[in-house]
Length: 177
Image 1 (cartoon, one colour):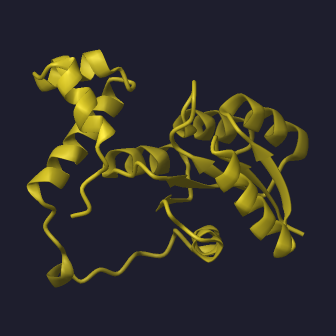
Image 2: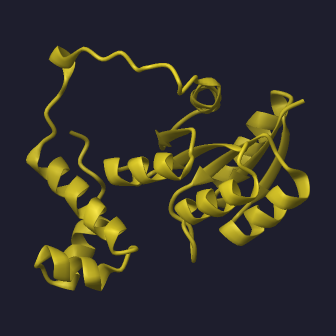
Image 3: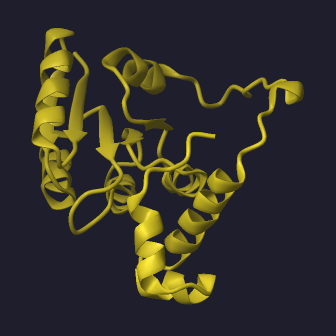
């Protein structure tokens, strides 16, 4: 029987996922923050980890880094409502298996875990959709913020904008296209 740890600071969302995975026959562990998750990973050694990116104190990227150092075979899927190319790339570099934006249902999550990441992804270049200017700006801000270890003041300084302006931009949802 496969085991999974669900790491998300939203109690309601986490409990729904726990119920869904339990109904499908998985052994499920849960944690609301990075420190609790690391403790449970060390105690239970789950096969998989579903990790939210944005959590209080430490981020999901910190969890990936520390969990992979302790347990390199752990298969991690990152699930977040604040998706950007910069954070997805960083998560994959740190050892995440896949990256999913919220909302994602249990079938999407299971498909992400079972996906063979060694196979090349076929893409038709004619189908490439050019991102909007708002989306390109959002991606750039996320990259700079990530480079500054999520320090808003430092990122605003690098971007050449006022800190409050950057905060307002970050509170908006990411543009869809």
